[in-house]
Length: 214
Image 1 (cartoon, rainbow, N blue to C red):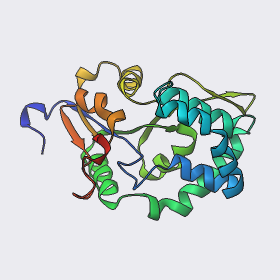
Image 2 (image 1 turned 90 degrees about the horizontal axis):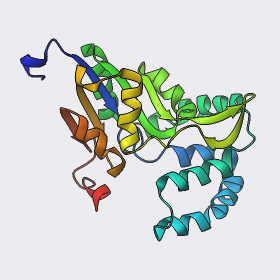
Image 3 (image 1 turned 30 degrees about the horizontal axis):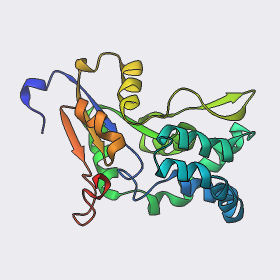
């Protein structure tokens, strides 16, 4: 329950997606679903060298995400990805989504808060999920030219400080809001630090809590 001193302040409720509202990463599963096992694993093999460079800290999360997008998304029609995302959402919703997380989103919507997803996953893939949840969406944007994906990001990967920057770019001064946030990994820490009500791994079982910070 919110403190009565803040009852007249508009509430902005922000949820991470992968690992917070879902049981696991949705993007890799989407790629496997959309491209099939054979093409998926061929793509993952191509990601081996960037993956090793990431593990030895020669490149960061952003560069690795750019490589992943380049390998799988270059030259694809945006409409095709959108259709695949719709089917993926319908087919995997029950297996993917955490019931407690869905209830929390519903509670925030019912309370009258502004509710948005804020995720590092591509927005084009998450759109069917936010449509079903009835909330707004902030995600990593992919560059599109003539309705075809170039394989590049448009702007930064939406994680860490970029989550807060994206929120500010859309909603303005966050000080105008009572900011509530839910996340589960290091990529959410800046978002959680900016919130008056921060919830870390709220929907995880006790056995799995804090594993993401080890």
